[in-house]
Image (cartoon, rainbow over all chains, first blue to last red; front, side):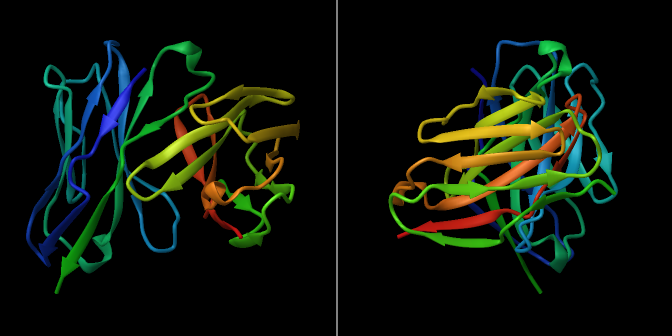
Length: 118
Length: 111
């Protein structure tokens, strides 16, 4: 079974600075998907970024980028120019590409609470 | 936008009660999921369904059951609520595993 580990329960950053959230995972598969989700106090889970394992290029979405190291099974999220609205719980998640895509269940890490200081 | 609606934002139930958590999605998604969220543990999959009347156990199904009589509705049932089922419950739906939409969660307290 796949496992996802986020070793930083809490992180903090100053507004406008850069912060990196860590995520490692364990799998024997070669093809899969990785995600970062944001959960603000409203509880609504918001997709931040997605990475397909077969793509070597790191995904980027505006101020959010990932450092995907497939051999090391590491998938960190970098937030540049941090804003107060970035404060939230962040979850790393894994999804297998096997199973015909009909199930698509996600395996989540423990979460990292990000605080942004003005 | 696809919406996933959970019937209650907060719920307080007594030990031993039968509890129903309802989830409805409006975009004809084939897959629906129930997760439980606890501090330090992240989200853990309870049950999922890939079609009407079809269901599969997730990682922590004990004490729970589900029902999917219509494609848009996926219900989580606590047969006899216990205090260790006090938690946040999140419903999600997806089409082919490509895009996920989550509900806003139900915070259940069992007293």
